[in-house]
Amino acid sequence: MTDFLKRCWAVVDLDAIAHNFQQVRRRLVPTCLVMAVVKADAYSHGDRYVAGELARQGANWFGVSNIDEAISLRRQGIYQPILILGSTPAENAALLGRYAITQTIFSAEYARELQQQAALAGVTLDVHIKVDTGMSRLGFAAAEEDQVAAAAEEIAGVCALENLRAYGIFTHFSCADEKDPGSEAFTRRQYALFLKVIAALSDRGIEFPLRHCCNSAAVLRYPEMQLDMVRPGVILYGLAPSPDCEGLADLKPAMSLHCVISMVKELKAGCAVSYGRTFTAPQDMRIATVPIGYADGFDRRLSNNARMLLHGQYAPVVGSVCMDQLMLDVTHIPDARAGDEVTIIGAEGERAVTFDEMAARLGTINYEKMCLIGKRVPRLYRRGGEDLDVVDYVRQAVREKP
Ligand SMILES: *Cc1c(COP(=O)(O)O)cnc(C)c1O
Image (cartoon, rainbow, N blue to C red; front, top):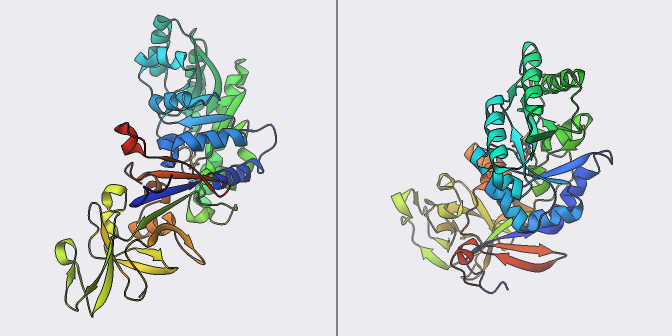
């Protein structure tokens, strides 16, 4: 199954996903549901096997970004409720109905459009109401105390629409991952505003059985805000939401990245490496050419600024990262040979290279590095220490089995 994995590939450890899910589960009261967030193809891990594993572990709901991701989950046999966290063109009302997908309602105007299209299509749609308590992204505005009454008024109007069935309400935190006092106060304020909107609706006789607000960071840092359901994403994949959340749970990174050396060559002192000659050998050295580049998601800004592992040792990236290849300094690893395996992300013995390290070098967040692992990289799924299957998006697209 893995014979053809001789370029660059990702290994997704489903046991790690299961372990991380249970780390979430154990922090919750038994009645609290878990919506596993699997948007962006399960943060690039591949939603097919990941969602299946999460369902097996007891995920009650799935969260996605758009209708295509939702339909893809349905086609893969996921029968749990699915919430689209973003906007769906109202013209897709019939599809939402056909696939029994729950849509987020974030404004009165959007609710009216969706109501109209749902009525035309002859469907009644399940929806969750999104309240904006300070993220300033989607949602009915309630970021200030004096907006609560108007938000409740508008939401009550949505709840009266005939073809929309609103039984969930949620908000999203903007800085639950940060532990400075300002961020903590802001998170608590967001939570309080959310509860005020819910109370104002309750006064009107409108109740929501599913109230939810916790992302990964809030699951770890504010378990008292779990309400009826939580929406973890990044921790299911084994990464901390931010450095401030480091060590708050025993997480296992689910994805590792590997490739094999294409060739090893001797370089004379003074020879330059790669495009732009940004690296010149200070003395005689040995370099290894490896088949991963920026088209695979290995950021070009990591040129001369990253490291990989081989034979249990770190090897620095030298010269510019190319589209499909880059070079490593292996002078200090004399037994490095063509065909040897390189760990791009992952551990070898005591040493590791992580998405966190890569993100720190680039001044960004681990989420982004993970999501940008390209579709050209086949994903090998492993469970119980055994290889389960390979998903290769490119070969799939040309309808050719490995
Ligand atoms: C992405 C997302 C989540 C999950 O966030 P993590 O930080 O990965 O846990 C939860 N809720 C909403 C609305 C999201 O967009």
